[in-house]
Length: 410
Image (cartoon, rainbow, N blue to C red; front, side):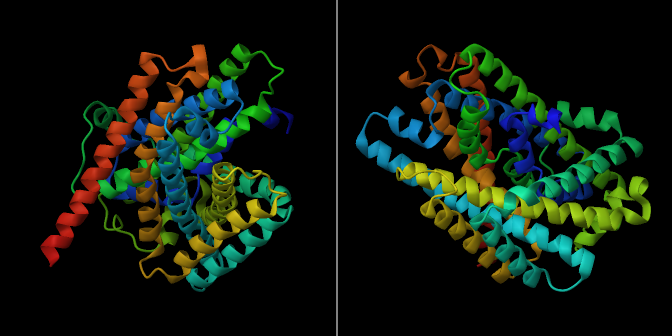
């Protein structure tokens, strides 16, 4: 596993967004719209690389986390207070939504394997995540879970190559992006499952451990940029492969509007055969449980930084913050009356709507005097601004359509 240790936090970013939300959302995108939304994946990958690179540079130059940097970058006390309130609110809401999707995703995997009710499995997953976060057990279990996720991801990519997707159609949808009827929620979910707001906070913190202060800064920045670009691109390839396999298995068929998550395993049958269902379910469980540990942990880092506490998993306040996210997300997963697939889709869309807020705070900080000569140039500002505007526009359009639908039904 020596080669694995060479990777930096970019791989953590990828592992965080290749979860059950990505599998479910990308599968639905391919099944219902074919390759029409492939542009949203490319946009999400470019947006993730842009924002994560900014967060990495911020952490390496200032040797501080994103939350602390935002507080120092804003000139007035009132702005600092408002920014912390908004960031904490966004991360708590966003990570709770993610946690709901993570718990439900893991529960769906167990439901496919053993039967039963996903809500009862959700309670078990929540209890397991809570126990692991309060102990050191997660460190030993996570390697096995990540290995299962890698196997499932590899099979999706191999299957996508095997089924030989229509590359001309892929290119056509990249050149002429479109928003098919009733696809806005899915587009927001694709963005929300890839450009994960809490990953920006994680990245700014973890680069400091991977590239210590004793290293030459210019070399650390170069390595971090390469690490981020390669890892996130790899995640984008996996997401696109899931869309391709779903399009081949379901699009333009009677199964396009599937309601049973176990049907999604059909995507892997060209490669895995009769083992497809078991592999898909095990991978979904592993992805869900792994992310169920990551999301609360990231939220705890943000909360501790905001209140000046020690962001360390040996601190009782850190553990309490992580436990609160687990309880909130699990409670919603157990009580929500919509289908698990719809809940996961909604959770990803919620994070897509929250993204512009975090992106704006990051952009403001990247242009502050804290970074000195390493402040953003016009090109990075243009890219970051474009990402924020597109995400905000899609989010606003989605909210407007929901309001219009509610009004028309009254």
